[in-house]
Structures are given as structure tokens and as C-alpha cells.
Image 1 (cartoon, rainbow, N blue to C red):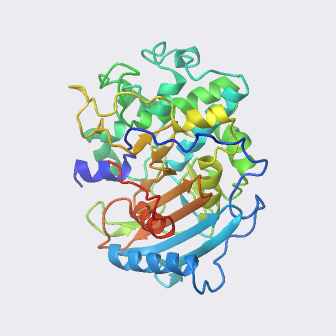
Image 2 (image 1 turned 120 degrees about the horizontal axis):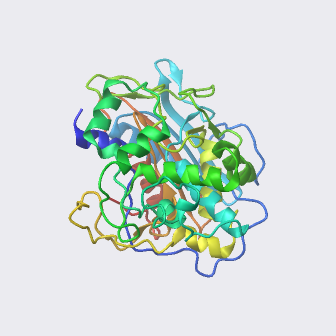
Length: 409
């Protein structure tokens, strides 16, 4: 597999210039939004949608599945505490229909939880965003010049180990390998930085491994426990779970990919390299919709921290240095921006992971209290890239034509 193909599968990139939905925001609601009034219910398909928005979402999902060659599409749309539609199309495996209750990997969705957990600690007066991370990670080179904000906003200049040819070759050769955080961070810190910390922006998986380690040191709490206490529990994400192995809870949405040249099952390929230990998670579509609403509305944050989530003052976008190629430090666009572990895409707050046959998207429009959650898997000839994000964009264009979700990257 080519370097560019693997990088496209694993680098979750974003761009500049915030259009902030935080302006004039009221205090966070007592009950986090999520389409069920915060009460956890079994995730199941809606009854026959009939006409209206539900039928339109299904029509778009069916057309997109056929057009992009998707094996399965699972989708949930909510508006405030009201479900618009929940549906599953296609199959998990041959003869096994996809179902909304099936679990799948949520990848960099967990990074939005890291950002929110950090900001909750700020609200609690336990840390400041501009505290140097060297206070907790003294062995990190230039740790006295890298702040918690820089880690969460991805402005440290650390090389992204996912882009290194040696790492890509190792993953392709053995996708079941268990990687340690130390091995992965060493791949990044062992290379010259792309730029001085805080002077530019580029996505690096190493930033979030380090942020997870720092959060553990700050709180004296294992990361999976911390995220459960600070984010997952308060948002009612009962089906979102960390695992230290490639295990996925039943029922499972199986994934398949042609990324190694042969169409093969990739469900249990090891995700240990994707983000910080303790934040390697699985979820279902109902939790993903709750997550979109809870994170996107800043339900757990003060108004000041919600503004920081969306607009941390990310610098350097569009001003690549010699060591930071334009394909890495992306050019500035008018309506996209990287926040603290989230993408701000026009008026939407989003994330959309991609991992060896799995694609997902969570997107939230604060002005409409509209949450869109999508998970997709692929057939042998499926279109490459973030297919779940493509479907989310199409749903947004139909339901809120005045608020499209922009492209990025």
C-alpha cells in the first residue's frame, strides 16, 4: 500500500478561520442534549419514517450507499431531545443485516473527549491551558515550551508518526501489532520538529498521546477512568467503552478493507496506535449522536471554556514553514478551523474518524440543536476516504441548506 493511501486513512486533518457558534451562548443546559432527554435507551431503528425529514435522510443514505459502494450505513439524526430518525442499511457480514445497536470503533471522536476533559479541569481550577506540559512530563523535549493548549490544538510542531514510512510499513506488515505509547511518541520526538511550538498548526497523533499522559499525571487517575467520570458518564454514553485490546463488544459491526491489496476483514486489527491508551474506544450510533450534541453544545463546560473549545487561538494555519509541507500544514480556508480536539466546520462542530474499513462522523449545529451521527463500512470497490463525513454533509445540505458542512483538507 502506498504511503499516501495509508496517510489518507489515518490522518484526521482540519483547517483555519473560525465562524464561532459560541457568540451569545447561554449557560449549558442541566441535561445534556442527545435525542432522548439524557435517558439511556436501547439503540434501535425508528419505526416506519413515512414522510418529512426522516424519509429524506433515509433516501439520501440509500442513494449514498449505492453511489459510494458501502457495505453498511448506520445513521441517527436528532434535534434537541427529539429523534428524527435512526436506521441501518446493508450488512455487517454476509447474511447479517446491519443494526443500530452494533458497536464500531470511534477513533478520533475520543480526542474531542480529551479536549472537553481538559477544559473541565480548567473550569475546576486544577490547571490552566497555558501551563507548560513539562510540569507533568519532564522528559518531553522542549516540554517547558509546549503548553496543554498546544497539545489539544495540535500546534506543537511534533512530527506525526503516522506519516513516517517506517511506521506505515510496520502497520501494513502486521496490523495486529500492539503498540505502546512510548514507542509511538519516540517516533515523533526522534525527528526534528516541523516548526517551533505554538507558531504553526499540523495534525499529529503524538499530541494526543501526550495530552492523555498529561491528564493522567494532573489528576492521578487512569485515562479511561478520568474520561468516564468527566465526559462519558455525564453525557450518558453508556455504550462507549475503552479497551486495551482489539476487542469490540457484541453486537459488532464488522469492517472490511482492500488497503493491503486484498479485500479482507479488518474488524480486529489493532487500534493501539490510533490515540492515547485509555481513549481507544468503541461506541454505537445512539451514543455517537449523544456525543455530537453533548460535545458540540458544550453541555459540560462553562461559556468561557466552550469558547476555548471552539476558538483556542490556533495559529499558523496557511503559513507553512520549510519543514512543514503544505500537505501537512494546510492552507487557510474561510470557514474551517481546528479547536481543542474538535473541528469547527462552518457553523458545525464535528469530528470524523477513519480506521481500516471503518468511517464515522459526528456533527452538531448549535443554532438548530441538530446532531448527525453516521457510521459506514465498505464493499470491495468502495470510494476511498471519509465516506461517513460525505453522508453527513449531504444530510446537512438537505435538512439545513443555509448551514452546509464545508469540506476540509
